[in-house]
Amino acid sequence: MRKVINKEVANLDFYKIFKPELSPKRMLELGVFGGSYFGLDIKEFPKSWFKNAKISKNFDVSLNRFKVVSGLSREHWIEKGWIFKEDPLGWFQWYCRFTNGRRISHIDEIQIKRWKNFRRHVLAIEKNCEQGDLGCRKRQRQAILQWAYDPYR
Image (cartoon, rainbow, N blue to C red):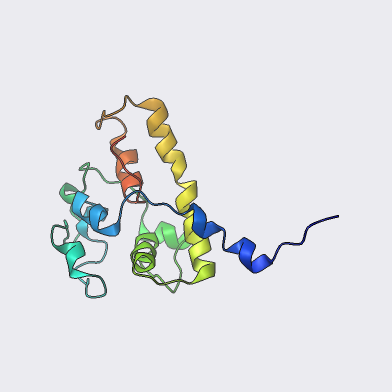
């Protein structure tokens, strides 16, 4: 006999897997997205997040933790269907809003699954780099930082 699972409960299991290693505040302090993810439009988020943040109106690679460009263009994100009207700036905007308590289950599920799938880059660093060698795979380290994974492995 097959057990019937309440679909709504089964669909909410994705929240249990979401365990980011870094907060938005910490990511901003370390240096992500060339400092320009939000431009300077940061009113929506806690001021404390930006006290020591590396931010800029325009992209500045020197503000990235690993001083490298890492990631795809916004145009590519749109083309791939990774941008949603709820968060027109993308994953990090979603993560910031999620951290502040916003929940939209169908969007949360998509973004949490994207975050989980990005773990393959963490595994590549662990497989190919000596622990603590921050010069190894700097682009990949910058990328995992931008997905709330700790790049200091």
